Amino acid sequence: MFQDPQPYIIVEHHYQWLEITLNRPASFNALSQEMMHHLKVAIDQVHQNDNLSCIIIKATGKAFCAGHDIKQMQANAKQDYYQELFHQCSHLMQSIVECPIPVIAQVQGIATAAGCQLVASCDLAIASDDARFAVSGINLGLFCATPAVALSRNIHPKQAMEMLLTGEFISATKAQSLGLINGVVANDELTAATRELATKISHKAKAAVRTGKAMFYPQLDMTLGQAYEYATGHMVNNLMDAETQGGLDAFVNKTSKD
Image (cartoon, rainbow, N blue to C red; front, side, top):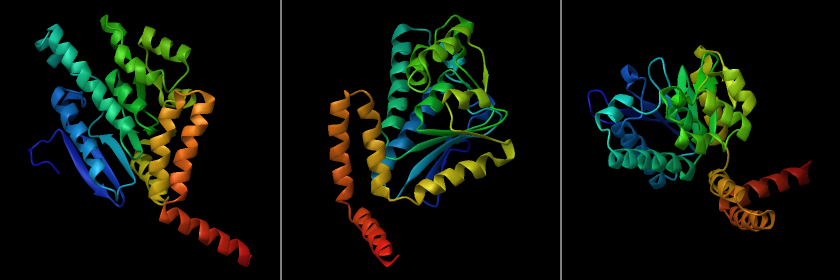
């Protein structure tokens, strides 16, 4: 855990997963440059820990994440600064996709603009029934171009364009129906439900989970034949793992006895 009196994020180990908590409730956990830096460092450190099965990203306070820090952006209203800022954010979102283990968003309150992008970049997401989602930059005269990249890879383009062009909030139930999140639970059940999902993943063979994460996204951009060839290589490598062979042997032995 970081030693700052009020750290930007809090990192805790729970069983076989990592919980990363956005910890700037006064700013609705806006993605300032400092917040993004600390979050990316925590995610990148996972590459050095083979014992972890997944990550949960959650937040303190009333909001999950209100997007970029507008005050910080306006205090540095220069093209070079904006270019650097959005490159930093893009690298953060890509680090989540490229993380070797699944990342789960635990969402309460609002997730807007880059906050919605953060949810869309995670592999899985559970939200409280009072959570709301929007890409609302359009209301300020700014099309949420970089959030659109992640959003359009989660939901149908027409649904994404409606959110991007109207800036209107959608409910957690609507977000689930569109495929942005996996489940909706009561607010007082959110932590338990997210940890239950993390526990299920943690009980699976680590080689299988990491293989799945590694192959899933790249194959989406391939032709059908390329995707099958790519998937075959990953499946063969997975089969050669000792833990996988042990699971197959146990299944065969049990079936033989039955």
